[in-house]
Image (cartoon, rainbow, N blue to C red; front, top):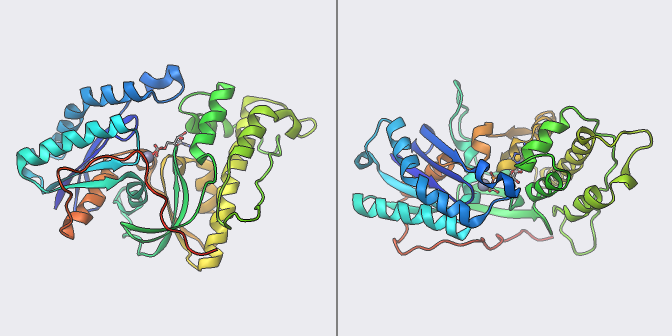
Length: 343
Ligand code: KG4
Ligand code: ZN
């Protein structure tokens, strides 16, 4: 089964053809970063207008690189939530029109489930077998920070989530404040490699009464880095961009890791799949990779950020089950937080 996946939830215009839910036949990602850079953030109207200009060309390239005509497709999958409404609507309308004109099955996909599914795709010269369910998921992006138990490609149970900012958002805001570069997460990660992570001892959020054992919080760290930097500087340490970046990165990722390690201990599940833009973080990849007794799967960097392959892959899984979406389906900016397990 060969499915075309369309992704336009934010500022990447992406399309991919995936075979049998795992084999990537093509993966085209056209980034709009240069268009948003001068604003240091994604401008929704620019994003949706650019998707409108690009989506046909991106999808055509995905088909051409897969060596296919649109009539050879077995189905079309598209991100319908969460994301920027105007951007999502471009991809959805395009996918609906294509599916209708070809008379092919059509399915709407949740972008966050897509990020988790990225670890199940094949890549590299010796692809790993699929990760058997259940496993723990670390879903970390610009809008979400979720630790979950993954029961199936479309069934997750949220164990913990952020009570304020998402981890990627914290990276972006700190980078913007210090002028480290755009997009912020990758800029901080790059700078941090040359910095001293002990230069600033940023505060770690403590667990308050009523908060969940696996919940995350980033507003305290963000405020400390942006407004109270000097208070946390180790005597003698220099306030260089590299040192700020390294100390911030360590603090931000250590929060994630501490909650994840609790979840591993409590559930007894020792396999973890990471997904979302922050899964590209070099320190996170090293930290989890070095944890003994833990089997962790990170998608390659190209599949951590937004891409069409994760949408096509998950679309295959729905279509294999015979699950399709109505052509009247709409987009949603947000997804309701999935059910949590008891405290
Ligand atoms: O998954 P994604 O591409 O889009 C969303 O669904 O949000 O994630 C984007 C987020 C941004 O906040 C970006 O700064 C962050 O991922 N990011 C990183 C790194 N690369 C991207 N954060 C930390 N380290 C990185 N290397
Ligand atoms: Zn994403």
